[in-house]
Amino acid sequence: MSRDLFGEVPRAGSPAPGSMLARLIDGPVAPGRLVWIGLRPARRAPMRVVETALAEEGQGLVGDRFSSSRNGARQVTIASAEQLQAIAGYLSRTEVAPERLRRNLLVEGINLSALRNRRFRVGDAVLEWSGDCHPCSRMEEELGPGGYNAVRGHGGITARVLEGGTIRRGDAVLRLLDAPPDGAGVLP
Image (cartoon, rainbow, N blue to C red; front, side, top):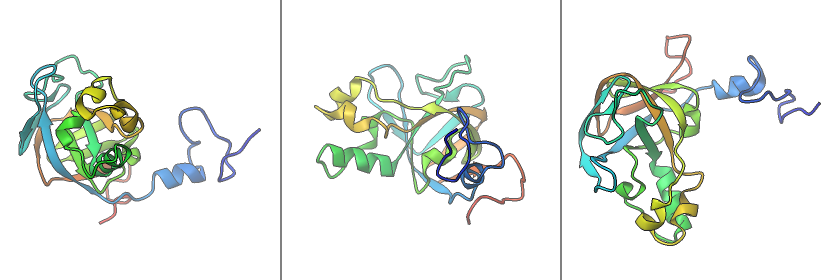
């Protein structure tokens, strides 16, 4: 039986409860900050950059084409400024504009992998990680040759809206813990 780096026997999907790896994953996460908000009003339409957005429970962001009452997994898409910088580097550019990636929210200062299988707060809304946001063939059109491969592994995440509320540029992004609710696990 093989063991992971910490001597634990890996299980499919997630680490064993109480294992060293599970304790590390549950460890503190510094809060991030929302730096950009964009809405996609229709398929292939230009992104609409806004200062605030309203997240509706079970639907997504009001005014975004993925907002619906179907409670789908792709209600909100999120990328990080750090991922955007990596994508620019892979394309030999100094920067890539956030609207080129066609995600709803751009955050900085928080590793989106730390939100995997978690709930998190952005402004007044509570979201829940629902998957990775993989690139589509449109990335070649938006970013030029090599755009698709530059985004692979750096496309961000998708989330569901569990509690609606207003999201504003500059809001904190905080991972929420199932227990205890006393703030343990979140760095100041």
